[in-house]
Length: 221
Ligand SMILES: C[S@@+](CC[C@H](N)C(=O)[O-])C[C@H]1O[C@@H](n2cnc3c(N)ncnc32)[C@H](O)[C@@H]1O
Image 1 (cartoon, protein in one colour):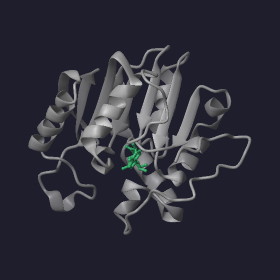
Image 2 (cartoon, rainbow, N blue to C red):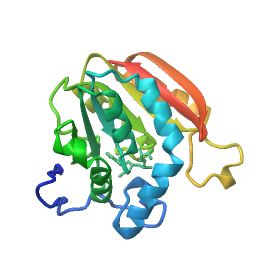
Image 3 (cartoon, rainbow, N blue to C red):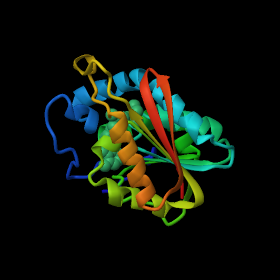
Image 4 (cartoon, rainbow, N blue to C red):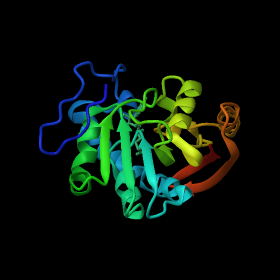
């Protein structure tokens, strides 16, 4: 899997779709088909405050080389590119529907080479060692196939002192009312522990109400 968006040719997704689950909840894990397209637009609105929070925590500078994992609809990519004016923004997502939607949203900067989007998984990031100095993942850690090796894979593409920002939704007290499930504070502490365990340092958790209660884990390579 790793077809990249090339706006001069039709996007050809991988023949084997990496979306395995079925049911409407799976549309958040890997949006597919027409419903997936609609879900993408809904997430772009619903998750906008959380994405802004993540981007703010990443503190993007004009020359930064940034990767977003699980970009979905591509609003995060759009925002990152506004800050990394002279830098480079790459994104990976396993859903071909989301790659198309995000490409539409960001077509001008893809054309000029500032943004590059690929259909790929966090388990095999299609970039070389130390390619980025910042990595963002909002609202998709819960879908990663295997968190520990996936975090090691992120470390591989981050340069020394590079920053990872991983944002998660906190479980609402009245869970029945929450459409998208969240994490408990203990689970977030555990994830932060895993981030530390794989070798990241200066691990911090920042909490804010960003639409929903949100926690971003910040960690240095
Ligand atoms: C809930 S959506 C979040 C989209 C966006 N980040 C947001 O906050 O609105 C999760 C996204 O992660 C993507 N995703 C799921 N598993 C992935 C994986 N293993 N590697 C990369 N992206 C993945 C899905 O295709 C989907 O676009």
